[in-house]
Length: 568
Image (cartoon, rainbow, N blue to C red; front, side, top):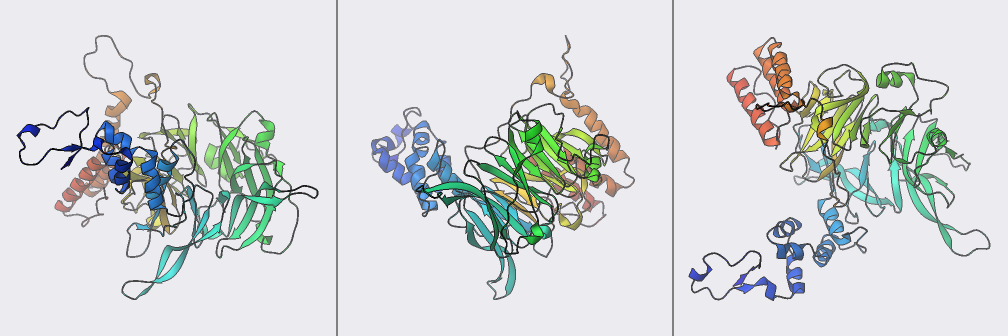
């Protein structure tokens, strides 16, 4: 009989009364190497659970030797453990949690499916769906080409399957981009920022590593164009902006400077060689003290986030400028690259940029939306445009944010660590599963979310979610100081009754007013379901209320069974 005996746990209760079972042997009598070897055969989920039982097993399950064996079991072809403070544990968890999930909006089967998992991939860092296929970049710079293909089902039928085969497109990739429009039909080419070894100049020995941009056809993966930069310039991100004939490539250096060059995308497939001019972008020329941390773009605008959390905007067309800011007063058609600073109350961590609206997330986990709100894509509960960042008070601490043509998605995590997907805006074409009429507020979508989902993207045909957990890059939000909480009343002397922080009572009164204004019982039921999605409840509580409202609606004999309850 082998028994775990931890000094901090004390003797097992009632152990003296157990007769005839032999003397228990403590795990601590075994060599640590043997215990680590045994533990390494457990599934990752069980290793994590075992490490939470006591201090002894926490040290055993947290040892790098255990995670090295687990990593080599999960990814036998992985030769190096990667980087970081805990390289083997990080590599094992990256490969255990990696996955690309998708759900098609049309067809009979509307369930979550998983794509093929490349055996050579070391976790998933980011992905991009194009017109016909999906591209995935892992943590060691390998770019994979996931193809759609006709396959034979178990019943012998030929069916079209999404992302079911893969090949390695290239190695040494840092970043990649394609046409920034939401419609994947326009994504004909894939631009890959990579590092390549170039032969040395005449009279020198050896080679030098130089950054380059390689252009591939998304349909076949064939490289059609390549431009190489000087070895002294090192880039980390690439985004595209503009039309096909005047496609601007924006390149972010390691020092936080923005460079740009213009290519004619319609001539890339012609065999020719020419020189393009790489110039410093105006945001880096006019504001040389700024250090840009990341970029986002669409067809006619670009957004920059600095290392200090500031946000600067470039808008290139008057229509999008009017949608974003509500006026054309400061728009200069002769100087479209002039950066505009957004006034924000705190440091911005990440953003999402749609066609004519945007979303920002600050260091306190607050979500701010701005721009056109014709379909309710800002999630403010109405359809009024916002010319400045407006906080969505009932949502906080998102994992990911995505803005499309006329709808928005938020990936959030509940207090019980369950993930849920919220959406608002236009629901046509099934882009908001469970809400075909759309919603002016963020509501929970009827879709099962993977446990380790970290990013998402929506196209006209499909919703994609990337699963990957990096133990060293978790978004950490700060606690909002009490003095900056909107709606918190000032404490009064002698006030014995509990206060109402955040204006919850006023919000409930507004909800009752909206329900009372509905003309029929069915409309009131639908409005109540929508309000449940707005309220800051746990996932299980929202599921309970939605199921109860469906039961009441069916009992009232109106509207049929209604939409199915969301999966928890």
